[in-house]
Length: 137
Image (cartoon, rainbow, N blue to C red; front, side, top):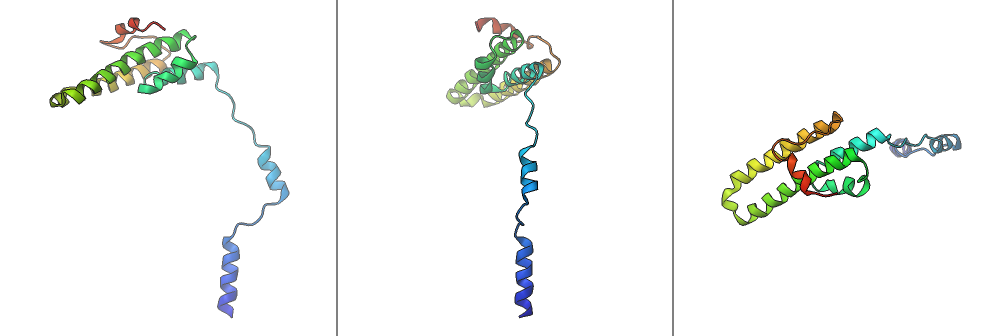
């Protein structure tokens, strides 16, 4: 009998206790998250520009901002190179080492672009940044 009483007490301790009405009302009055500042929004959109297909998000949402527009164009150049390399790699798989090196270069260029965004600079990417003029946005 004592074993059953002990197990009943242990089970009741494991079950969650109902909350009082004071605790539930405190949870409802929690402050809501603040909206992004315009500077934070620009930074976020700039970083998304260098993350492959995510360049579509700032392209659609923040086209009117010149800072974001500049980085979207740079990101589109990188995405185009990545797509071209992917297509060529699927056709000419024998050159996979070259394609891996090009992919590594695009990752490095993406990091350079993200660093430029974090420093609030509109600086073209090395070697390929001038190709952004072919993307009229």
